[in-house]
Length: 207
Image (tube, rainbow, N blue to C red; front, side, top):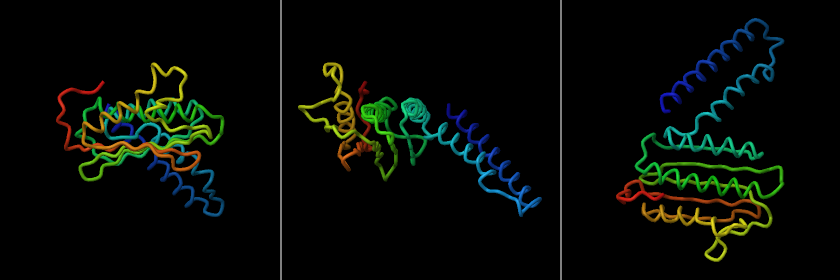
């Protein structure tokens, strides 16, 4: 998977360089009639393709974001993902995907519950010192109620739902980290999971 991502980036690089060369030739040939909007359309498409196909240098995380972003966009949700971390993370792959996947699923579910056209999810995975910070910010409807011990989920099937955030908190605790879910504005919430990469000595992976 990692090699495929590298090949995609190389292809996108070659495509963009070729596009720049075409624009240069057009400027030199007819500088008076050169139009930026017309020539930049294909360049923008190249950038959009890169954004959709490559998110994270970590293969499992990149695959997860690819699937979640594709599903969210099918639901009319605008997705932005920013990853600033090394390819090799000192976090178990299952734990990493459990935390990130649950936060993305919660954000998608929250966005899909209201009809406002401006549905957005902004996710980021950033390394700071020994810590990995996974943050997902998303829009919510006016009837949003933050989960608590008494209100685990907004779904009607409470028997089979509501354990996602509990799992996230459990994994964060295992890595000597923390979890926080806060309401930024009336229509925006942000979930933040912090994991200490130096504290991954637990023997049993969390499923």
